Image (cartoon, rainbow, N blue to C red):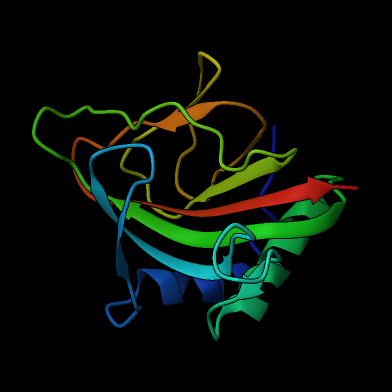
Length: 164
């Protein structure tokens, strides 16, 4: 069981992401035909002219502290953060609906999701449903996809990183 230490930093970040004045940007899924809202704290190394992760938000230092605190509480040592973002998906016609199976990078990495809302929407990793309620943490590797919620917004913090 992966734990969320519920630090003050985490609660501050969660409050910011779920606030009415948080900046969300419309994104087109790279592997599906749907739009979702996202806010990139750290851009993936595959984006831009420089093949390294880059900070992309004034909240990046806070988000990275939260990732560090969650990983430390679970005995996970992070060597390099590749990407960190907040993602929000909403129900669509025909819910429940799923994103297409995918991997986030074409190189070795670990995924960590923290659910900020409790509206359902599991993450399915190589056939196994990983359910997490509000504040729940899921850590995994491999091909995966998301289940869309049937009501409300599924808001998650997502990070990809290289384990040390």
